[in-house]
Length: 458
Image (cartoon, rainbow, N blue to C red):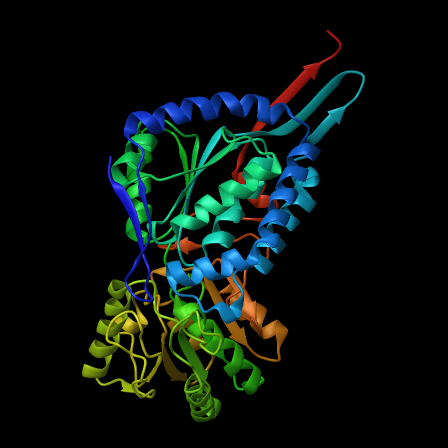
């Protein structure tokens, strides 16, 4: 057995440390959770929905805990109040649509025969959740998986150990049995052994591209389904007819919120030449208002990145871009300590030869390039190995849809960005991975079709 340790980016202090399960313990837990799944799936769906709603409500009553523990674990400023709004929106929507989403597809119901396709649970679902939006990303799968009749084993990132425990406490307080939903501390070896040993029936992984590849290797030959939501390098395109003030406010928020640590955050911006100078000027003015500092102080608008290592990677991208000719627009802020506290940055004179425009940054930096027309913007937006979301800013919805049809991405936004609509499928393409979260399709991903052909007359 090893240990998982959460080190606070605020001051380097240890927030939590947990012993990891051994392989034998993990496989033993798998057996008990698979056994419990049969009885759980046999309970009326309305009971499962009610328990998920109750657990969601309990988390809502403990938002202060959520807010302050997030600040300590991964550095999000307390002024933003945690994640309950999005958490509640997603959980509630999946509760609302469950009966319709999971209803049998009736082909024939006659005196001669009954033919239908039912959706049945997969069994034990392993949710491997990330630290950057630890409540919202986890509930994307936990809620529909439980409602569909699966049992759920949650493995949270070391950086947000307390989130997994908080979720497990809330669900168990609501009345969900501990062998139906449980939080575990697992290291890489334990996770690999559990999956490769056939200990789970489905894996939902949110994390890095490298991590996604490892999950697929673990599952190779087991026929265990693996859904992945991996890296992103999401673009925004500002057309000449855009509402420029709205575009600047939203796009820069999409680039900088959560210290840029968002899988669907804006990491590159393409602006029509006619409005390029104005956009850059307004963007720089806005980012210069950032208050970098201790996330437990209400005045702080940007806290530290989740670790010194992550900040070092972003600094390296920025330094390499500047060395190659990029222009930095934001002066070093007083709170920038060369460690986890990193000055947000806007870069111009960037090209796609630079890592900052090609590799995922996952930090508070964005490159901005002028483009002469839609064709150029489309080509640049597609010039990426990632494909999670893309944002188009324009007053012409028809043009936005036409451009969107040609983009290699999972979601197309017009006049908004950095948002997950639970009614729409959250998915990606290329190295962003393969999966279908939320929406009706989220239920389909967490169940399998089972066909019935009941011939009544011989």
